[in-house]
Length: 201
Image 1 (cartoon, helix red, strand yellow):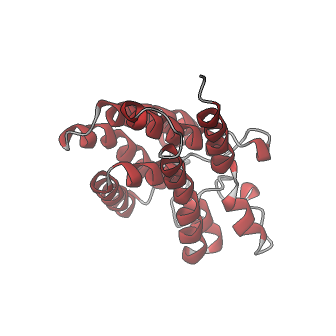
Image 2: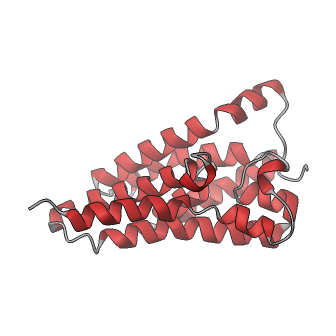
């Protein structure tokens, strides 16, 4: 029998990912985050425009979306041999929902915090090291995009280092590809010297 319950949860993961927490947080302060700073609704732009507390709030909420998607995989009622694959697929769907939200006419963020939430559920050590890499590079360069791209690019290598399942490694490559796709304009601005630093409004 086709696992309709798993398909339902698959769709739920998309809608969880699509929740635009950045807009909710900013509008509570009378600001439309999509029209300020970089125009992104993620944690970095929230911190830039609304302050560190708002940025951390958006980071936590967006990361929770990825974490929740992986947790839902345990309730998909699929054979145990498919659990790892289900976790990464559900995680990718949540990231896709964040990046292309139905609530924002299929626009969205860059997916970095949601990716972090998925990785946190898959392997907290990889999440910690990727997070430290992000912090270090942002501290050195003041560019959130540089830290984000380096951290996501490192994730598949970190999964390999910790001998994680091939599904996790595949997730690392897929999520990194999504991150680079969503940062194409950032890469162009970096090359032209027009990229906003994390502390520039």
